[in-house]
Length: 114
Length: 114
Image 1 (cartoon, rainbow over the protein chains, first blue to last red):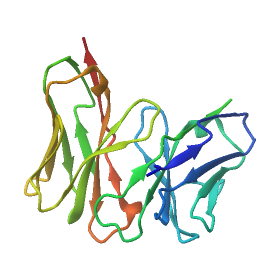
Image 2: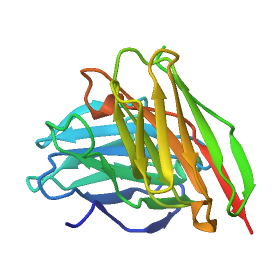
Image 3: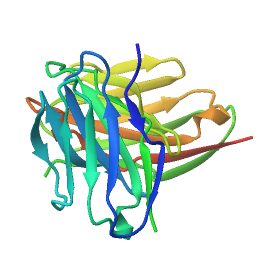
């Protein structure tokens, strides 16, 4: 079974540009979660998508947005990039009805803003 | 406020030695507690998952324990290997909450030296 896949692995952008990160969940998983992990810090919840809808978002500015496609893959968009947006962005997926387990992370996209 | 505190923040041990990582939480009630291993620059990988009614769960050389009365969990690593060098993250899911409500600890960074 393929795991959660994220692309690209690395992304370098300049301040003010836009970045698009992509995530493909495990087959059968309908929920996708996005997290930001800045260097030396814990995971910070960004967004949750389920069945194509945004279900919840964390304490991040509107510059962070995304969407989920009919095949449950998702993309995260970060507009007007700032230097402090440099971080590892992690995607996780789960089954909507999962109570224990089934919460699997991808390998992440390392975004560097220069 | 729901919190997960991990200690120590970092740890250095010699290859072959055992070690124990601690996780104290204030999340109550909770549905499950997970331990993840995160290699540098990679996504977290699940090691163990315990429901509130379980006391211990093993995965090879990793053994997690849970004391719901004292709200403490520990991860014991036996006969450490160089490949165990990573960050170990404790995650608690409040009861009746979806994945967005996962409470992440900041992790313990383990370095195993030869």
